[in-house]
Every structure is written in structure tokens, then in C-alpha cells.
Length: 178
Image (cartoon, rainbow, N blue to C red; front, side, top):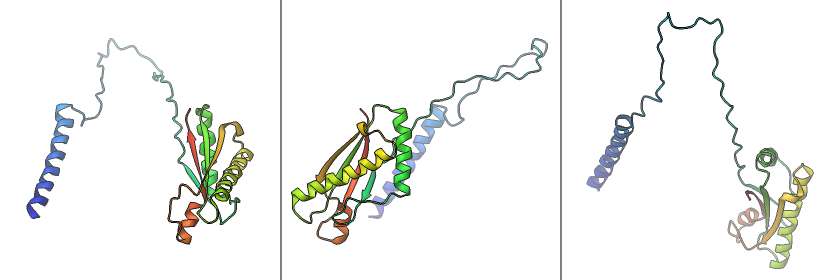
């Protein structure tokens, strides 16, 4: 076991050093970008009282895609409490949708496995529609929101425990680019 450990350690050291040598000495990336300096003689340099500022176009800010949001629900209910995480998601979502007008919001409702599958399918849809109506009330256009229900068919935890069932009672919100 000891020779294997020493071999792996030596390989890691060798690969790190060879990568450093290649990047720094072969490609000359360690000193940073090259800056060209023009040297002119004082007698040929025009005298100016103002400082010339190079004009550059401002880089377009890239609005990151908000992370997916999961909203949990109580047993057999489609009500939820808006909190800081939902508010943050909504503000990031609005900023992203302004930059990417063709994007869509997909809201998928889920339920635990308590009760009949048809009831859980309908409950998942009620939860998705409730979140959609909340988002519309916060200024998100209804036309860009799609809702669906997976009912009890896609659990994220074991339905045999109360904690697992609580995790399965949720909606998942995604932003899709068209």
C-alpha cells in the first residue's frame, strides 16, 4: 500500500511541476500579458496639457441564469409562504428575462405518495398554478410561464418517512431558453 501511495504522490507532484513549466516557460503566461511601451524622444513628443484617455466600449454585462428554485408545501395544501429566497429568485428572474426575452419559466408541481395517484397529480397541478399566479402578481408575464404536474411520480426522497414525504411536496421552477 505504501508504494502505491508514494507513486500517486510522485505522479501528482510531477504533473503539477510539468504543467507549471509548460505554462510559464513554454507559453510565457506567468509574467502576465505583455504591455507594449512606446518610448519617444522628448524633442519629438508634442506638448499637451490634457491627458489622453483611451475610449473603450463598456463590456456588456452578462446576466447569469438564476439557479432553479424549489418551494416546499405542507401536507395536502397548495399554499406557501413567500420568503427571502423567493424574492431573490424573482428579482434575478426579472433581470434575466429582460436580457433574454425569449426565455420561459417552467413550474412543475409534485406531491408525496399519500393518497391516490390521480389526486396527487391534481394537487401537483394546483401547487404549480398557485406559484404561477404568485409570479404573475409579482410582474412576471403569464404568457412565459408553463405549468405541469408530476404528481407523485418523481420523488426526491423516500415516501416511507415523514421527512421524505415533506421533501416530495414541492414545486420546482426552472428558466428555459428558447
